[in-house]
Image (cartoon, rainbow, N blue to C red; front, side, top):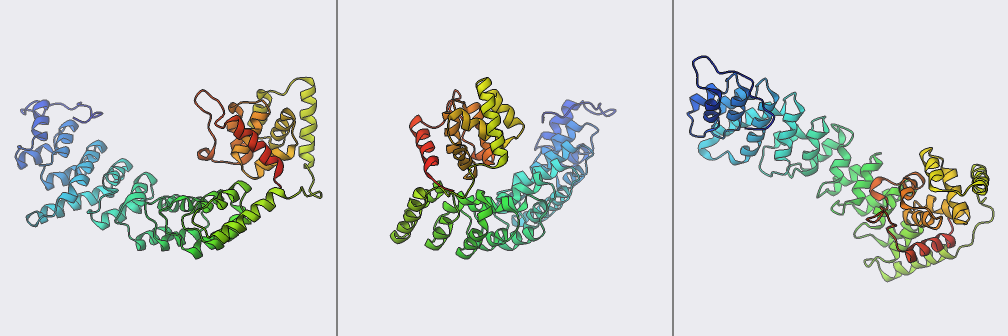
Length: 412
């Protein structure tokens, strides 16, 4: 019997013992009348056996759908959700109708676990009733609706648009953006929203059908959304117009990626390379101050601290825990004996490889590089460079030297 269901109830007066009743409830050869009687058994273990039995008549299933024990209803939901696609042959029409009615009652169950069980069982099935799928997709509890929103092949474009217009919860757009296929009209609706995370997920999804006009509109909004830049640069079938627009706003390393795309015309690549060369060779702008007053104060503090006792990882970790960006920048700069502007460039470019390389040059380890990537570059956990097995740096010494040199020669 299913784990977690305790056999606490006693034996009905004059009846067989519980073990015998469980066997009868689980047997496909038990008569329908007996199974219906066992559906009302005082033992939850017996009722669970009946709920799992494929031979249980629909009338008994209907009784079990109202069982007082949530675990029995979960087991019944799993059985019915699995069997509904198999029902519907001509002489089973009535059986199918009754099973479907019982399943719809379970979809309205107040227990989240019951509804979530059904959603998980039918999430990717192509031959379940549309009404059932839509009821689950509109569930306000994400653990119920997310599997349907993410995987169900029965959600048509019109259904997805309606769900975006009246979302059951805040994660609706992000979930739909992850679907294996996102129709162009749905992608346009997500792109027109103010849900920046959903838009980022949409851009990262190569199966999302994003029209040229939609992508152009997003690029026009992207300057203040650096997390969109990488996914935009890597979108399939990027047009020369989109590539030129991106070249004006993305960081230098992403501009380098644009120049290496094989699907752009030769003329477009030439223009992008000119843009990259101009940016790499541009001189520092003399009217831009090297550091803000807050950074100057942090640098003075770091120099004084370094003169008293060598700046170490504990000092840097303490500044990171306090979210003191200026002190973190200053500590790296003083320890690495580099201008603070290099650290600031890595930070403004959200350049994880560059920042990790500067941490290495400063003599620190990946133990501090991990929290610093999140704090200084404002990167999500999925974008952080992780240490190698054993805690070492994920880049070679040659790569890290190149990154430091790269930061020394670019202008932002």
